[in-house]
Each structure stands twice: as C-alpha cells, then as structure tokens.
Image 1 (tube, rainbow, N blue to C red):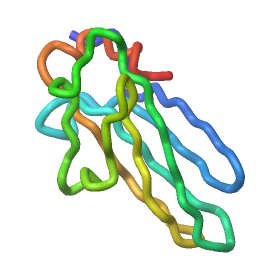
Image 2 (image 1 turned 180 degrees about the vertical axis):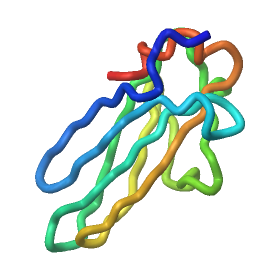
Image 3 (image 1 turned 30 degrees about the vertical axis):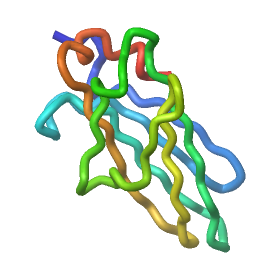
Length: 111
C-alpha cells in the first residue's frame, strides 16, 4: 500500500509554463505519475522536463503510456526526459507508470 496520498501534488512554474505532478494509483492499469503541463505563453514554446528516478529503479521499472505521450519521453541515465512543443494556451497530460513494487514508496517520486 502506498503511503503517498493521491491528492498530493507538486507544482512548478517558469516562464509562462506550469507543470503539476501527481500520483495516480487508480486511473491507469498500473500506478502512475501524472503531469499536467500548461503553457500560458503567447507563442509556441519548447518544453524539456527532466524527472529524477530513485537509485534502485531501472528503465524496465518505468513505462510510458502510448495514449499519454510515450513518444515524447526518453531515458537519460538516472533521469527520464519529456520534450514537446506547446502552442499558446495549450494544456497536455502525460504519465509514466510504475511497474512492480515501486508504488509502495511513491513519495520518492514526488519531488
């Protein structure tokens, strides 16, 4: 059982782009980390979001959902990277899934 609350959210904003990160244990086939990315800029912007994964987690422990932007994610060493262009005012939701027992200690993902 996870000790992170589903309603717990981490939010960051920079240069007119806001990212809201949350743990979604029940909305996908496996527990997932969801990101809602919003551009409040007046022009198209390229967004590169880097998320650290805990040391014991391997690339095989993380999965990217094909209906939620899998093609925009990549693995770079001990980080995962999301890269995509956003139109003015666009909002987009993307997720990665946690395979195996990784959802038991999910707060380590919520940074």
